[in-house]
Length: 246
Image 1 (cartoon, rainbow, N blue to C red):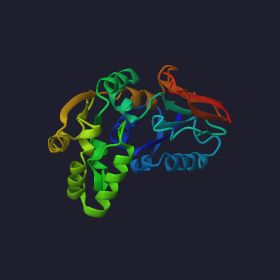
Image 2 (spheres, one colour):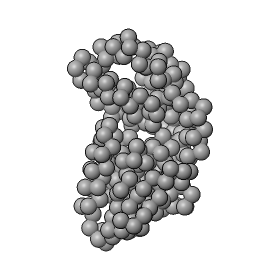
Image 3 (tube, one colour):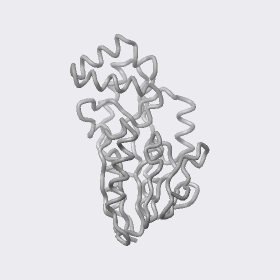
Image 4 (cartoon, rainbow, N blue to C red):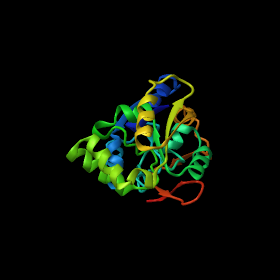
């Protein structure tokens, strides 16, 4: 098959690695992770990228995204199937399954999640992780504004004075992929955890969902194949995403 992957750039290393071994021909296009800050902007950009793909160019379009605050809701292609993982956000893609993510979230909802790609592509606020930060979205916006105005050290100080970090979070998790040795940036995460008084934990990650997305192993339980002329919609149940006629 000839496939097109449109993905958040936090999945760059896993996507390139899996594409290199895929039996299919894959074109890859990444979008900046910062688009997650405003789901409507991410949705508009994804829609724009999909609109640029013509009929017959690809056998399928793959999205390297979870539902991501409904950022992919409403997306469609008039002529090409879209394949999307059944995931709330990219933490599931790094951990390898929805079940594992759900278990972690229920046990430790106040968690910041870190991966090599996210840290490498962090920009000015590199240690602010939006990989499924489940509370405090307004807090993250404030922090980003502080970084822009006062610098990261001063922003951290202001957030600590306000007690923002400890009010919402108590754990920093570094996901270490098992199948391949990506750069080890865990020291950075450990330092952030120590500075903010969080517990530091390493968890084993898995490439299986990213691999199967790019290998074409699209079982119904883990992936949604959106038919041409249908739009993606949240299901608000364990299926996470579904489709309807546009």
